[in-house]
Length: 242
Image (cartoon, rainbow, N blue to C red; front, side, top):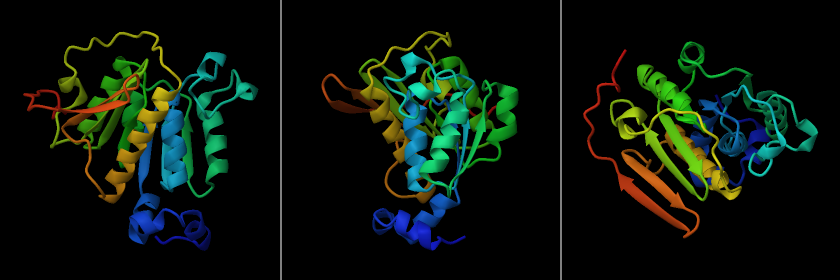
């Protein structure tokens, strides 16, 4: 697969940085983004703008007024509409070259099995650990790289998980109890963390740079600090379960 004349112009500022072949690699990459809230809005926007060839997005929620402080894909004209359908329309207008597949579905294990196997990379853009651990288990079952991000208040974190090279999310965050609660967050935090997640996807797709593998990047917005926490070896019985 090659780039069209239109794509050469569209990515004119990016190709000199990453190279023609890597732009083609982006075009040949398919990404699943689970969640279209504050993180998902940012992640999908930048992946589509960057030229990822196919994006699959999943979210069962509708747009509410309280979303609009951080979820930049939406505005007051789409209140009450399914986020996934609004996202497909806006992302397709941003870059018609990208295939945007949408599911207005809750991400359950059974549903996830049907779509995870057909993508190259999975992105966690969720706000609850119960669903995160489902995504995590499927990523390791089907040997898919998983970019995890989470936010709360002025704080956020990102790590990239690769089956066979890193422990799974459940192993890293063993003390987390998967209870559902509302996550309160400052508008800018998902923007910062979401861009970093999108950047990890671009590096996974192209092979450029150094990934956050066996590392957790922790962001403190109150102090403008980024800290890297090294992940120690974890004796994991979950990572390689069938």
